[in-house]
Structure formats: structure tokens, C-alpha cells
Length: 149
Image (cartoon, rainbow, N blue to C red; front, side):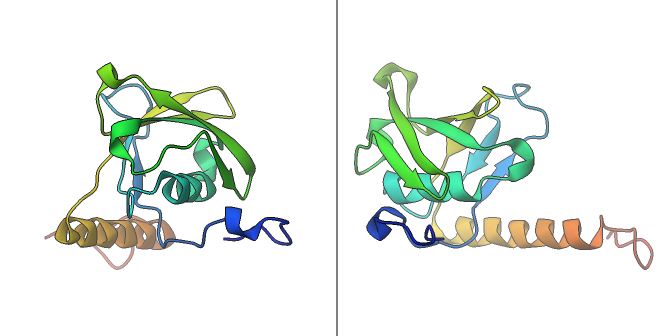
């Protein structure tokens, strides 16, 4: 996921794998608009991964805000495939475990960040793979009869 021909290749982190993100279909109808399972607590790397791999159908992230206590490093900007993204801090009173992202459409999404144990992460990845297969092949029960248990 490096920017091709970039002058500062160290600013563009290597790909981490699948973006472990699940968004709600209708925004602002729940406490959070999605859940994100980062691979670690390095905001520069994880934030760039979130911005670069964010689903295009929802828009493109142009700003990010986070609570300082959730991440190992502080950042005021993140370099991504789309360019530099400004980053801000959320007030301590707001609590942790949430990241606010503003899309280029001016919509703001509240995304819960969770750092799961290994077993939970593997289960989430399995769900992502099955969801990707469902998108490719259609919902269960549409091909070859009913698959319901």
C-alpha cells in the first residue's frame, strides 16, 4: 500500500492485512456507527490503514479524532495513499475506545475501537471472510437451495 513514486516512502506504512471494520448500514441510529479492531496501538500505522482501506461506498476519510489514552503515540497528522490527513485529540472526559472520522461528505462517524484477544480477532476475521464470500456469491439460500441450519 505504498504511494507509488512517493518522495517519502517511510511515511507510507506497509499493509497490515484485512481492515477489520464493520459499519452499520444506517449511520447515527446506534451508539456507534461501527466497530474497528486495529492490529496494534500505533495510531500512525493503524490510522493510515483505516483511511486507505475504508469502504469507498461510504466515502473517504479526511479527518480523524481519537482519545490520547488509547494509543501509544500522539499524532497530529497521518500520511496515507490519499495524502495527509489531519488528526485531532478528543477530550479526556469523552472516554476511550472511540474514534471519530469525518468523511469528505462532512458526515462524522463514531467508530468503536477494540483491541481483542487473539481468539476474538480470529473469529472476527472469519466473519469478514464469510461476509466477503457472501457479497461475491450472494446471500445464503440464493444458490443451490436453502442453506439455513
